[in-house]
Length: 369
Length: 179
Image (cartoon, rainbow over all chains, first blue to last red; front, side):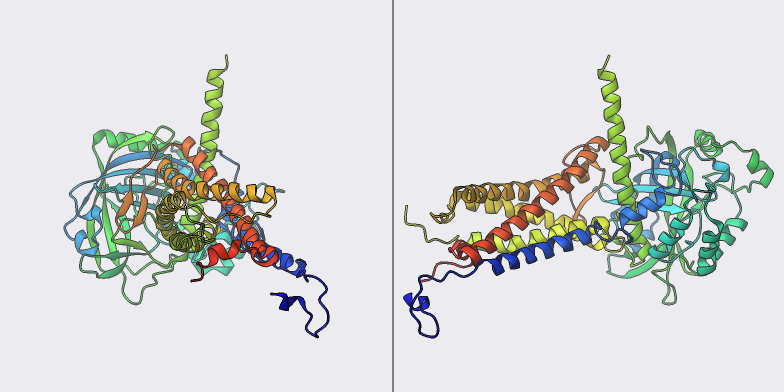
């Protein structure tokens, strides 16, 4: 032991030579600081300009006035419920439990695009359906689908850019046309989408609207065969096209009025049509529709037989994250799918916090005289 | 009782280093999956089963800790540091157990299925309720930040013992007694 108390050159001991703690303390601070910095960066607290689920949701919120407690997108809608009956061939595509039982309870939501919960049905170009299928073993299949057959953009980065371009200019209260034009010029799929919006027929009902999963998924069957698929809900109700004049005169809530009338006559049905990809098809690009001649299978029938206003319905407090999937169905590596999952979660958290605060405020009012 | 070997027992050391890796990974997975537009799906699939694993390991660890006293702290350690060491360890135990439970309850209150792996799911712990969800969702974040801060302080203190005080406290967890 005393050996170390001598200096290397053989000089006399000068008492115990304590090591200086300062470099060690500095090293500890450096390690802790580095770990804390990495954490803060990953959390999105540093580098605010980065696209995160938070900044993406902020960009969506910035496209219109705030409507606390409502969904950030597709804010206006109604809750629906019913059941799904899978076809025999569905089980050959996927071993998901929803395809293995005769009847699967369904909760859902029919809505229109846009962030205004009181928007006019007759000016909403996009309609949408969100569904939750729950099999008897408790597994869930959630989906959120739209009336457009392909997405305007292929990547979250382009989607973010497009969303930011849609924010109203403070000077005019409207989106800057130059920014919108720049998006159209930059992305051919955005031009194709505009073309769809101009030319696709406006149908008379949610019940006669076709809804598409523009993203691809993987189905795995009991034999372990994996197929890339997209699906759509093909309406059994015959579509009647609304003429421009008729549409302009239609009530702002004509879709929910129509739905109520139709449900009084009996359940509304959609066929689940599954398209199978070939090696040529883009699995990860929702801006490119697959050719119509791809092999298609009828996987079952959706029956909706009831509706409730969304503020009283069970659909309101659900996040229809398209990546909540049962065993036997997986998301593809389509980056839009991951982004939807991330942004829906962020939007759901904000909405539920607002609804909780609102409920607390109402409770307080009731307690006070 | 025999004189203490001055080291944590083998199970305690295995659990400590294994869980250190798991918990630090979980904190980074959690904070990344909430912000990332690209990485959420893969990370959340890891987050749930790892959380369940950490909960089970934390119970085992608590059991082992209650049965086997840890080595005593050095006699010359200032009183406040000894107190901080004890308090921070119980805080770490409390958070290791609370985080998975709050996460599980939070998903239940949010109406989410709690998928561990494939078709294996946990039942809902509390009813589906926006008020409860908002509360638990905030708690899950705040407790995670508290856990992260506690882990950083713990690492800082451990390295202080190893490099500055050089008093054997770090070695008590780093290795077993020499034979």
